[in-house]
Amino acid sequence: ALSLAQSSIAADNLATTTVSFTAKDAAGKAVAGLSGVTFATTQSGVTFGTVSESSGVYSATVKGSTPGTASITVSVNGTAVTGKTASLTLSAT
Image (cartoon, rainbow, N blue to C red):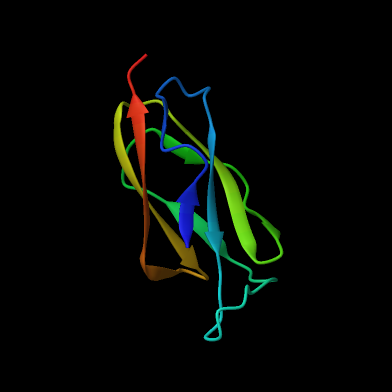
């Protein structure tokens, strides 16, 4: 699952929220220890912090400076995880 702690933040490049991805195996159990987990978006002005992992949940802070809607995706070792997106609204300040 790919989720956001908050679905809307101010586009002031100061407000942050956390994006989290839970990696699961075929049996539905969390997978810890993956390397190369990254988050991305095509929305300009959006930046992500360093990805950390705890018990198979990979998280990073996200902030932005351009108002709009950022569709966030996740990749593992450069391969996009299909069907996993989260939508972040960046509101003008």
